[in-house]
Image (cartoon, rainbow, N blue to C red; front, side, top):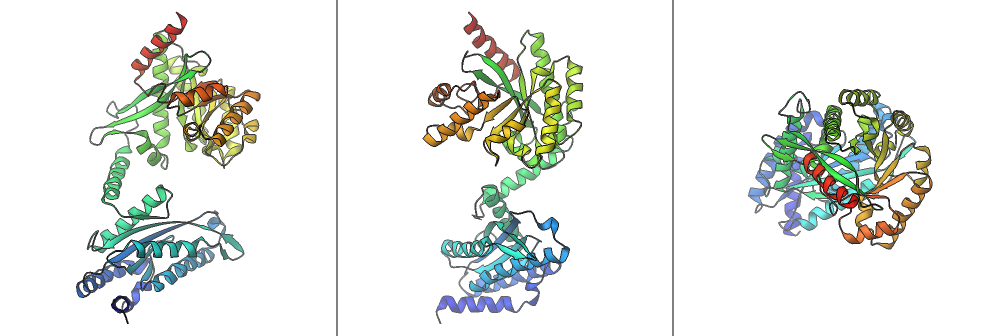
Length: 453
């Protein structure tokens, strides 16, 4: 027997002597404590052979879990556990179920462990990517795997499991199968937690210290060369964490009920800014983004109208942008809400158009006034196939009376190509980055007055 095989057999003997390792959530703490002893003894006895900790997070691509009985759901979970255990057995490891959809696989690896990690994760993916059948239902799984290594990343088992979980979160966020723990994941997680813990009460407009400010990115007419509107984008200046970009905190807050007070704060600040623009004799529409949760809020239109009345601003000066993905799955209610907003005089645009799973045909049923072509298309417009898609969107939207704004314009080549396609409006860093309201007003006076002179 080879030295490697002998080491693996001894490792398995260590683990096999711990019966509670095959238990479920109620015995997991004891299991973890015992794994610590096992790894410590094994590594010290066998030239510090590393031990890998895989956290395997699963989720159903087909949402059938809500339709299953409790015992049927448990049966699916057991089936997944058994599949992962098969892979663990093949690599002289063990598998423990930590959560309903989270599993810990512990196995020895060589000091050059990249190949071992790849073999194990690919083995898990192969077994879980097959369609499962349970009680007459067929489903498939999304799998995200995070890995940490003992003793390289830590000698503390609780930390190793947490590190593997962080790596799994990173894999899921990046839409990858596998991610190996990196120290940056820990600092990122701590920052996310700090941001989340700071959110309660931070978006109350009565608090002068909330740090939320609005910046404005211009929209240009390609026909006239004039600024014809702005998109209002929020920035959060945190007293301890510094400036937090919307790309960092918006995805976090969208998963909570706090997105609604934030949206209301943004609307209030934006309408207040429009009112100040009017006092400066500048009447130009400004767009705000609303989330899926906001779109489903039956009281949203009433709130917006009350804010407009408070600041004496007409509805045509406030545009509403909603993401395409927020409409999909809530189409009936979305149509109802959009229709209500349109009847009150608001222009409504679909943001990030082209990123959802819908087709151009559904535009005929949505009472929107505009679509914003997602920057993924604009940045790839030199690709002939992408260019054909963009041109088709512009032409079809024009035929049914829907305005088009192309986002993410970052160079003169894209601008010229969009112009040749007859795109009415454009927006992007090449034309103007988000600025404070006063800086944006300065730009509009300079650019629009130049064209009129």
